[in-house]
Image (cartoon, rainbow, N blue to C red):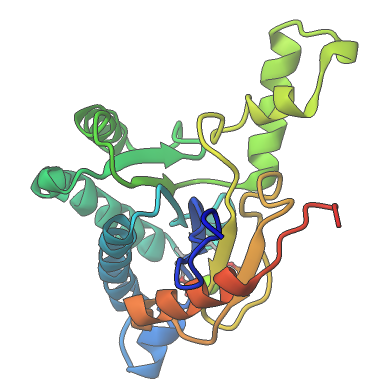
Length: 236
Ligand code: IPE
Ligand code: IPE
Ligand code: MG
């Protein structure tokens, strides 16, 4: 009995991944431009990241812009990039929060000033020991795997030496555990090219709440559900 886990003790995921979806519909419902939805969504992101840090989550990976999102009107893309800029400039103000910032995705096509801010913010927060926030920008799971294969071939690794670990270690997420829990709000039931390799054994949670309306209480509902899941990883 001495070793028995207290029933009240919650089994929290180490790594939560969120598809921050529904900003456009949130704005439309209010007769606002889509850009207003992205502004609201960015606020939600900050609230949820702080909350994850507070309750002791180690990794939070958020989908902010996909490799497919370039298809959107230029004005919308510019608006999202400006929000990213503001966030990166503002990161100074979160220094006391012990949050480590990281970016995943193909950052090459981003504007030079954004890339410089990313390098600076990652370096400035590198020693934080609380939550690691990974922001996925120009991220696509297929693009990531394609790039990994290119890097593996270029490095001259022999085909017979390639293992699952070889692939994992060439992904943007090489230095973190796979997501345990993937949350998608906004009533869509798909991954949209998110973490497709890493999510092989993740638990999923869907909700009709639009991302700008997503509150810590919704995350709590999700975590309560996660706590009841029985992850078997193919075993019994
Ligand atoms: C998610 O919200 C944000 C991005 C994809 C950048 P959407 O903009 O996709 O919102 P909906 O899905 O159109 O409501
Ligand atoms: C996924 O949402 C990408 C992000 C949230 C950044 P989308 O709105 O782009 O996905 P689809 O088009 O509904 O699949
Ligand atoms: Mg969407």
